[in-house]
Length: 130
Image (cartoon, rainbow, N blue to C red; front, side, top):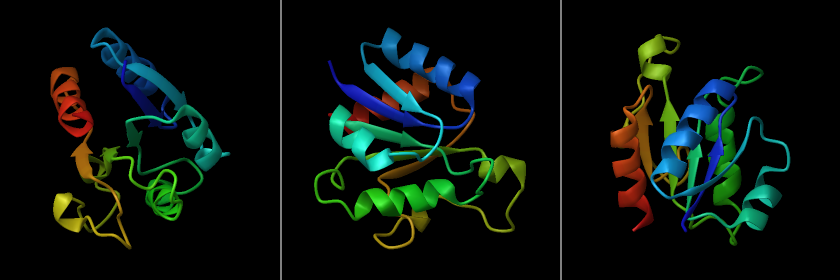
């Protein structure tokens, strides 16, 4: 069973995403903040990390977490799917997309906007974990 690590402050989104992923045969572990992120990922050893961008205390927390993950040799090769509603919320004058991915600023594998249809999410997860 492939393991997914989900980091998002939205408890309801975590619950619904977990349900969708588990129904597709994935094992899911989650957390709602960045506390002990690297250690938690190392101990769980997932095939994919799904990471939100914005957290209540820091609108850029997801970007910072992705960069933190990229500095650790034991976990930096795990694909990161950044899942965020930033573009729909209009919070930033700039929009983010897969064109913004780079090894320094946005070291992720793919950027997907939420809300995302569960079937599309499962399809993306299958693609990134195969």
